[in-house]
Image (cartoon, each protein chain N blue to C red):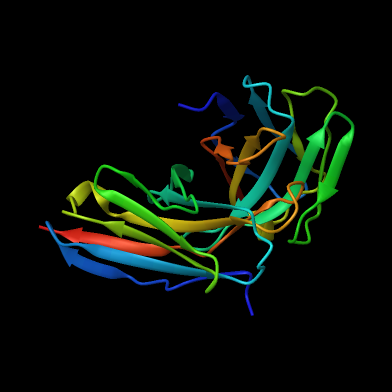
Length: 113
Length: 111
């Protein structure tokens, strides 16, 4: 089992609130990722990081921001939640070297009312 | 052309059947290939890596055809517990690029 954790697992929150989704891994992986996935749909990469102080935007335009101050921690923040942000958010990590397989956390299911 | 393409299915097969999924990828410089499994409303989990020589893990066999740029997954003697979505995943080119996930192929194994 992968040692990657996400909190909260479920969150229901009102429009306009600021949200931070937490992701931590204890595997010492340099690379971390955030994906967004709607039910029955494909994964969309929204942010990734290749190490401390490194962050990049993914393929899907996102109103969220991330930070990577510590290797094991990669939080995602939404400054002002909207109903369109309702989705599942999955965090993943991988080693820096080949073969690059990613390990996923259990996800945070976010509902914005 | 999408970077990683899969037949979305669903594939509905009886228990004990053999089923095969194919996946094509667009970048000939791709280096690493994987099959992930995702159960409904759960996170994706690595099923197996795909090596150039092909590899087998129990009832599962993965193969890579670099010339035609496709990978395949064969499941023999399907079990009810194999019902899931199978994601084809490719590392496109240079090592420091994120993995690209296909949309997935949904499999339902029926008793």
